Image 1 (tube, rainbow, N blue to C red):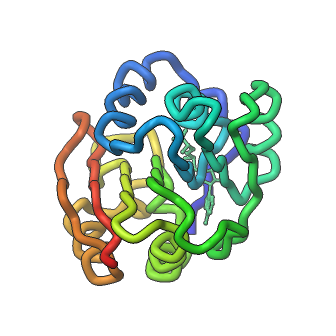
Image 2: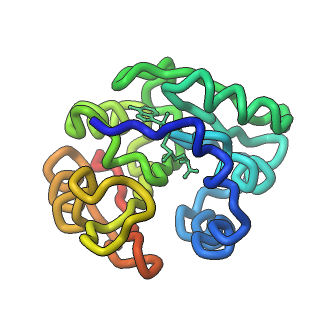
Length: 189
Ligand SMILES: C[S@@+](CC[C@H](N)C(=O)[O-])C[C@H]1O[C@@H](n2cnc3c(N)ncnc32)[C@H](O)[C@@H]1O
């Protein structure tokens, strides 16, 4: 499956992207209270990790997890706070305790999974019962030359049905920005 090229990492921190995706709104919608634990899977160089770390406070934690050592090094170069645990993960497995996470977020990652069912089931394992999952990704669009190649993108309806099939209850699914959809789901007990 198509994987993100770390040479393009700088683009992820473009101020226009913050303006479009609004991490504060994402945090509000994810709804994990300060002191909780958020898993930022496919965190890259930390677009969401840093706002999440500020929001969780010193009693909370953000697990910044990615497969790419290069992307994680870029995140570390930005000096995350002590409440950020930087974690290199395998394609599917992650060294995260079972039922330890209050909320997980995947931004522009779902289309990069090699086996989406295995990844979703691994997310289900690490989330607490009724833990929350937020997935954001670029909608297929033949006319959009930016972002992931169109043939790798996953439609909102496909992702929604998959999450429902693999152990989540979808509570919201909508276009969040002009080009990206959002799904919020709760782990079924
Ligand atoms: C397009 S970048 C998005 C980074 C970040 N979420 C953001 O929105 O700025 C996708 C990231 O997911 C990582 N990735 C791809 N497959 C992964 C997997 N199975 N598990 C964890 N990380 C993965 C890539 O290394 C890359 O850093």
